[in-house]
Amino acid sequence: MYYYKFKVYYDEVEDFVRDIEILSNDNFESLHKLLYDCIGLKGNEFASFSICDPKWNKQKEITLMDTSDDEEMEEPEYDEGDTFSTKSRLPKFVMRDSLLNKFITDPHQHILYEYDFMNPKIFYLELQKTLKTDSAEGFPRCTFKSMELPPEIKVNMANLEDPELEDEDYDDEEDDNLFGEEGFNEEDFGDLNEYSDF
Image (cartoon, rainbow, N blue to C red; front, top):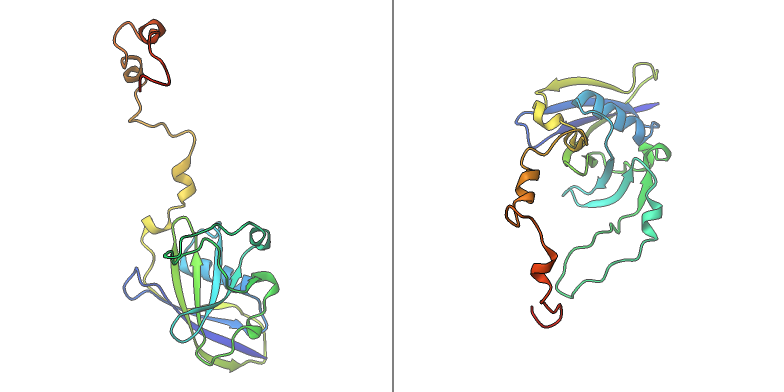
């Protein structure tokens, strides 16, 4: 039985590092849970892994949920000069069905972990070693931590959309005064022709 030892980096925080270990026959969903736990994320946002080449170019995408229904949506049309698309053309897989040892082919495999697409956080995983173990006990695990995420990065964007929060900049009285003290009067606009007067 073998396990992988990864080093995890986050560019937004200097000296942020995590060392993690996980069995090679475990799946990406377990890796996802280990990461949000040891990093300090809330764990309630959409996330995905991208298997990359040594230059961090994405080759395969492994998502938390099956997004195959999205593939059936019609591709929007773009001008010839456009170089973007709203739909990824990478081969897609689901975390719970994807074993690590089926995707890790490089001794120093590079993997991107993208968390919370509304407020993106991207972590870089680099395989350090593949080691043998006689027991599965204690895996997956975090063996080293350096630095924490700032509190503002951990904020769940959904909390900012609380319907109970009032918009302090909105003033009902301002709308009432748009047409003066007497308010809106349809007769003031009765002589306007909607097709020729504008």
